[in-house]
Amino acid sequence: MAHIIEVLRDTEAEARSFLDALFYSDSVSAIGRRPDGERTRAVAVNWDAEEEIELDERISQMVTDAIEADDDLDEIAAYCRLFPETVLYQPELADIE
Image (cartoon, rainbow, N blue to C red; front, top):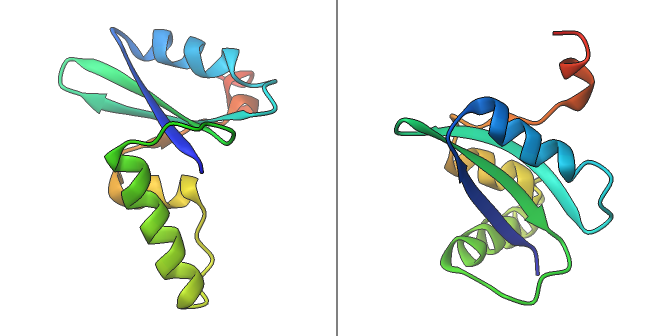
């Protein structure tokens, strides 16, 4: 099961640095970042995790429901539906900015 990782950072730059570190990982994919009060929450998904939290269960159920409805929804898209304020991680755009 996929496990959602959420890490609080003080700034967007720190959150982005965390996500950049995951770029070459085979088992963890960066999702993006979203505001959390005065801080920024960096979000990723670990595809090989054995632990499970309530958020993982909610997302898993959303994906299962989507499959049954013949809808195309993965864990990353499901997270973004739950938290629409999430800014997706796009490393190729960082080089332009």
